[in-house]
Image (tube, rainbow, N blue to C red; front, top):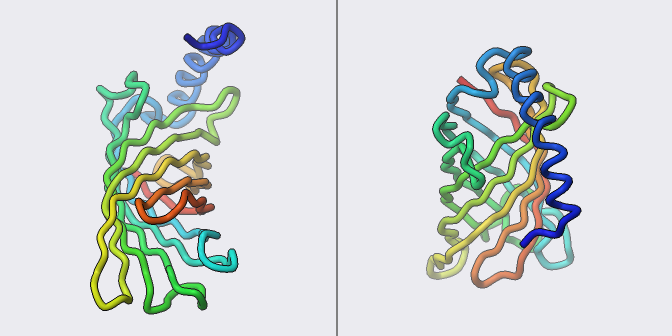
Amino acid sequence: MPPRPLLFAVLLLAPTAHSQTQTASASMPGMAMSTSTDLFVMIGSDFDRPGLLPRANLNFGAGHTFAFLKRDPIGDELTFAYTYENAGSHGFFHTRFGEHSEQAGIMKNFNLPKTALVSGYTWLQTGVTTYTGNSTLQNHLDTGVSLGAIIHLSFHNSLWLQETYSKVVTVPWYTTSSIGYTYSF
């Protein structure tokens, strides 16, 4: 059972969030209540490698928002993404050691009170990570949990700011900070 102050805050903010959804759809027609397909490119850096040096994290993917999932508390957009991470001990973009991940996920988009320019999202992902650079390829299950903000430049163009907590079976939890561009249609 949720704590009473949390329940009170949810009940207090629910009418504001509903009126914000109507405001967002009035200022950018179709944004809040329609389906869309998103193509995204994100660049970021992890700090999970030896010496806590930054390493490249490049993410490419697609997602599709479904109108019938708008009321689903887990998510309204199904995604597929490919991520390359530099797993070497030197260099930023590429060394012979890398992680290649294919992930399926579900994203929940939500409006923020009193603004139509910025919205938020949560994103749950799972997939397979392949480690390269050794004599054999190693495949491992991975999961990721992201929290982010979307800055809407127009109906079709947006910037994403994201923080992700990832876990590969053989590696401790690590964090990745990313910025990305998305084209929606």
